[in-house]
Image 1: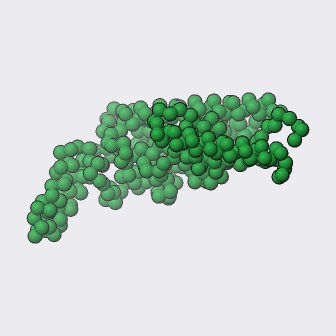
Image 2: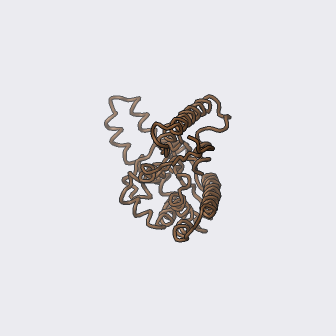
Image 3: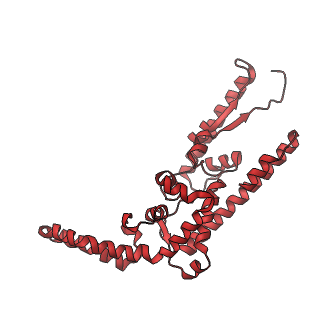
Length: 287
């Protein structure tokens, strides 16, 4: 944010200065994005546990809490969003809802959220018994609800409550937590897995705004042909990438070459207004 503010206030004159500004901005963004990726990799490996696809939860870590590491995790997540870095969407659903409102009674958990396999088996036993004895299903379900919830809460949420509360403190940076509390469903996509921000050929081509020459001119015909060729090229790269995971020069790489980014914008306002301006340079003035 400070970098953006400084760039907005500084006056640049002439094409050379503009080019310098773009190179500085591009290097800054690429370096910052790389930093966030490295940080997230270390955070997920050392401070979180669980299944990646369904989301991770904080691992009990007394030393990390003592040093305030989970507060830093919250602050890093805020800065990643503000600096247009990779979306920090790796939290389990229940973790996100606790961060929005620390009311454990309103949180629902799935089997994958219970890391301890012994506890997971213990919680599932009442439901297994209900299946074995259909005549006693109602009684067993009525009996099992409270014990299961108590076991789950104690062994899943309460054991990392210190880590969760510390992360909430970090999320207060720049008022992010207040926005999460007010608009939990809107912010969920930024923190919980599920939303795909992979750049597609459709998104890339729809983002292009070409500045064509006068209609009916030879230049306009050439420019239209170039855009049609580029469209086919992008679609071919997408098809080739889907067939081979080792294929280089995919849509993501093309998008990164044009914008410096590797993912689609994840903020709704930015995504709706996102555009790439295409300007054509002709070698001759004869047409």
